[in-house]
Amino acid sequence: MRELVGRLAALDPDASAAVQVIAYFDRLAEGRAGLEATVRGAAVLAGCAARLVDEERAVFLRVLADGHRDDHPSDDDPGWPRVRSGEVELVLEKPGPPSPVDLMVLERGVALARDVLDRTRGRAPDPALVELVVDASAGETARLHAAKRLRLGERARAIALPDGVVLVEPDGPARHPLGGVRAGVGPVVPVGRLPKSYADARVALRFADDVLGPTVVRFDDLGGLAAVAAAIGPATAPAPDVVTLGGLPAWALETLHAVVTSTSLRTAATHLTLHHSTLVDRLGRAEQLLGWEVRGPEGRFRLQLAFALRRLHAHPQ
Amino acid sequence: MTAVPFDPELAAALTVISQNMPSSLTPEMIPLLRQGMSGLAPAEDLTLGGIVDLTDVDLGDGVSVVVCRPVAAPTPAPVVYWIHGGGMIMGDHRVGLADPLAWAVELGLVVVSVDYRLAPEHPDPAPVEDCYRGLVWLAENAAELGVDPARIVVAGGSAGGGLAAGTALLARDRGGPGLLGQLLIYPMLDERNDTVSSHQMSGLGIWDHTSNETGWSALLGDRRGGPDVSIYASPSRAADLSGLPPAFVDVGSAETFRDEDVAYATAIWQAGGQAELHVWPGGFHGFDVMVPQAALSQRAKQARLDWLRRLLGH
Image 1 (cartoon, rainbow over the protein chains, first blue to last red):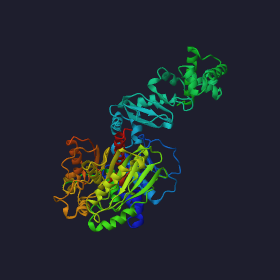
Image 2 (tube, chains in turn purple, brown; image 1 turned 90 degrees about the vertical axis):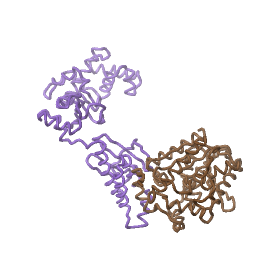
Image 3 (tube, rainbow over the protein chains, first blue to last red; image 1 turned 135 degrees about the vertical axis):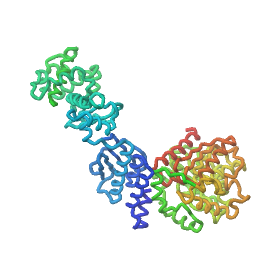
Image 4 (cartoon, each protein chain N blue to C red; image 1 turned 120 degrees about the horizontal axis):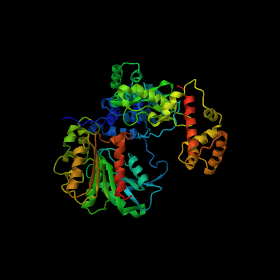
């Protein structure tokens, strides 16, 4: 097909390849073709793999130049030609600068992909609506209306990300891929109570840690720890155990954290890719630095609490 | 009559293809088409970068074959006897071999592709008799070629599919080489050109009613549609389809050949034979060759490969 496009341009300068690209995507739209067919069109017409990314809707789709679907990506190269429409990004996996045909493929391809996504998966949520639905100071009528427009159904949950970013999703399987950044997941509540779910999500977010983990924390899993969060504010002086942890070298922190979050020393060793005896040796030295034994239930609890408090101090809001 | 809609992806590609390939081909276009086909299809590297050995053999009287043997194929190897398409009027044995060669490499088989004489210069029975002669030659020289005469599959697309069906009928009726299977890709089977689908897709897609008339008339001249057409030229005319090897038949739902191909598979079942039939929704004639990247094309190619794999007991 691409050969045909190229040959056509060579044979007849009036019927330029760009015109054929337009006709191609127009016809796809007319036939209500799906997302994969759209991305395949871009890949085949541009003669390279093409990928479509919509992080908001958790869409990642990649088609090779021969038309086969292959969602296992190589690393994204910032030099690749790309175009963005709203949250939807279409990328051609070839070195820039793009040819006029590439540019037309990108422009038409991303426009069609966005239409298809809007048709098949609903519009990307309006950030203003999302903020409204979790805003306790907004009236309940306005919030319920926003929830309806966001198609959240009867029950939903809020998710808090760093820098005040909010996500909402209906009850059911997770819609947002989490784990890339710190995230706190609020409980599922009737949509009218989403401000509470969001408040809880923010509490959960304070326990998320992107160095030692866990990156994603669910409020529902916190239990009594949630109450501890309220006691630690920006002005609260850290407990001595927290100060101690803060003074430990990285290897000791990693070792202690792995041990305290694993069911056995053997699991912890596997996690750290250490030999069992090496771990035991390291743990002994870490315990010396720490000042207490962590292999019994009490010492273990004390260490877990210290780690929890440490995260709360690191994220005081 | 309402036409069957094309698959959206294929329809989009057709907007590009139809600039080069009109739906309706008429007899006066034959010379240009022959020129165009050789110009359109860039010379394929049939060695696939050196992993397939090629041997040309002249069988005399205007017929030749190319033997394609993957270097990794066993001896003796199963063999696909390939008959090219082109409406009985164009094409040659070295064009359109991408899929047969892919099977050869994947399944470790040898492909023998026959260059039969074309209509209208060589009307019926020249094409199908040439194909049969090539098959007999293949079976007789199996040992020398390193192929297993008990595992010969005849195969072809479009006119090549029709000729493959005709060759299988000839082999049955003349007590010729035994065949393991017949792989009929949207075969051109019925010279009467009067099914619902042959009218329904008039002026649309690839190889419409007019093109079909052009091809069959070149082959049969005034005999077309009359009482003197053999079942080997027009296999749809065969009243008895018993005693044939297992068949694979596939066809697009949006093409001239849909009804005759479905009917052929049905007649094989009714005669107590084995057939696997696929009707690809929204496929136009030759969609998988012209738009190999499309989702439907990928499925069609996979189905043929799977059938061959099962047939060969791999």
